[in-house]
Length: 468
Image 1 (cartoon, rainbow, N blue to C red):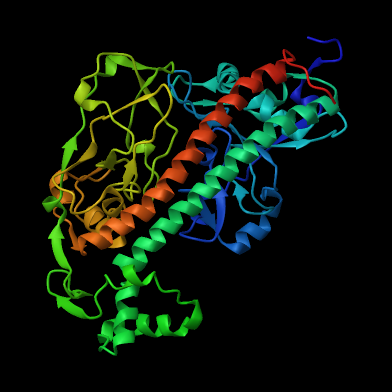
Image 2: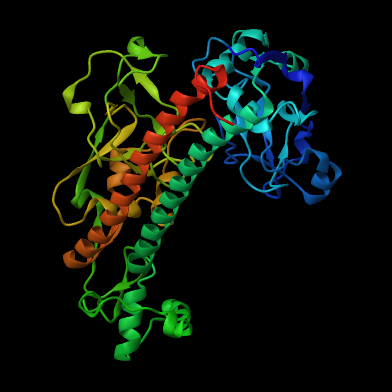
């Protein structure tokens, strides 16, 4: 360590402000978000499943609003016996000022002397997983639940280079994080584009309405409001290329099974006509690994609310693996179990990504789609499994109370509208180009994340020095 670096307690230049102890009666269904311990993830704030309070209560406790760039830490959680401990997690708010408040046992670092300590540097210094375990080691409580106080956090020793070097280190790591976040946002936009296309073509039937209006065909009463919205778009209503637009019908028929109007000539089929859903393998718990391995058991925790793959909460495996349960890139999975009260991810789909050096494994309680024919493509099925109608069926028919379950039979009994094959092929072609771009971004995210995680410990230890 170079001589100008020094070891100091965090409390020398910063203090930890705990969140407000909101009462249970303060919380309501909607309003101003309140971040709880579980919302402090590794490196980021995830406000899914957060609490809410009224604007009046928020105004009374406005000093607990989080500002852009604030660094938060979880102060209560599972202890050393848990492989994914919650206590000691550090995250940074990258949104705007006053997006949300913090609940009790969520701490916020307040810098006392900005001429000595850079907040961004503090964030990166405390971010690594091994640093979290150092907090777990000094926490008090039982093996299953521990607490760490503001005083304990403030007494934690950190290594500080000169301020300008702190800022340079934070800038390097922050630039990588910014690029990672930009790629994630791009992927979210690409996903939204594909979902919007599916909804337009196969849920709202916009192209069929356009053709019916052009042909002067009657519009069913149930669809007249949509037709008026299409007309109101005027020049903004951009038609598809003529050869594709002409593939869509120009009239509707009423379908008794779905109790709704569908395009004439399109059929209603069960998902079972196109696919089977295969159960995953019950991998043995004795071979689960706390240490990362190249084999990852996918679980319901790897599914996003609304559909899609989530690359965290990995469960590593170090044992024998049946070859039939090694997944391939773009395999389509469906989650069949959910631990949340609302069944947040139950029944949602995800495509298996390609990650260099990693094998993803088909674990139990996940269904793998196996195709019987090519009448519908993977993207058409994927977005069908994201619709509200499908979602209502799956959640409505779920078994269990604390843990909700669905089954291949329930998934495959879902009815979908089957368009002409050429229309589905055009949709698949368009969506595949979006999926390819998403995959390219994911690969870049992986590379940038590896670079950041390699540089971070070297920069904050002084092993690699930077010019400033």
